[in-house]
Amino acid sequence: MEVWVGFDMDECLGEFLSLWPFCETLTNRLFRAQRNEYLSLVAKRLEESDQHWLFRPGIDAVLQLLVDAQAVDKLYGCFILSNNGSQNLVECVRMILNIRAKRLGARGELFRVGWSRNSPCRKGDMKKSLDEIQECLTYERLPGARSLLFFDDMKHVLTSQIPNYIQVSPYIHYTPVSQIYHILTPVFQRLKLSATLLQSISKQGERMEAQDVKKEALEFSSPPLEPWYEAENAIHEFLGFIVRKPNTHRTPRVRKSARRKTAKSHIWKRY
Image (tube, rainbow, N blue to C red; front, side, top):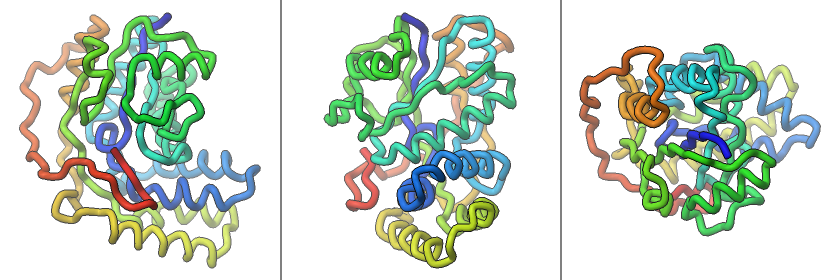
């Protein structure tokens, strides 16, 4: 049994709606041999680019704390537990986080695994329980959680099962599909993907965007460059591990969104 830190994905780590057509729809249209290469290239390209707002600002400082804790064996690893329907999307986000963590000095993979609601080890009820997490870790042949810190922007069953459940403010900054398409163009060119296929996927993404994105709730502008204090302070307290003095300022007030997650179209459903 080991010490783990887990994260929800959508609106917790960031806002990834615009990646869906490129990490799910397009990936499933590629030959099986191309899929891992494609997702790896997408992750590297997005990590290199600073032209998107996929991740919550301050994520690097949080990753640095986790990397530092891993280095002195205070932390075994991290995972993503998402009720998003795309395992390809979860895997791409996990890859990006590991690339960033490696740049910050991580040894091996900091984020060891990620699960969508369709992962084989999930029960399908999307309640996010401790038993489910333990079973999924066993399924992946990883040690179970002796101690667990979990971040989510919503409450789940896990809230009442562990003492270190942190409900964070939702992250609502949205990167348009067209912007992601522009960033990933070198990847499409490298794999020589057909223009017809890309046009089809792009149009589907734009239709999904028009259908599912609530413009009155999401922010279509660059987010303020604020530290993620609630995560930094929770990690310090959970691990009892101080590398740098934690910031003791109060978490900046964030405008409350009237939006709550609701079931969306059959193309994209989040919970």
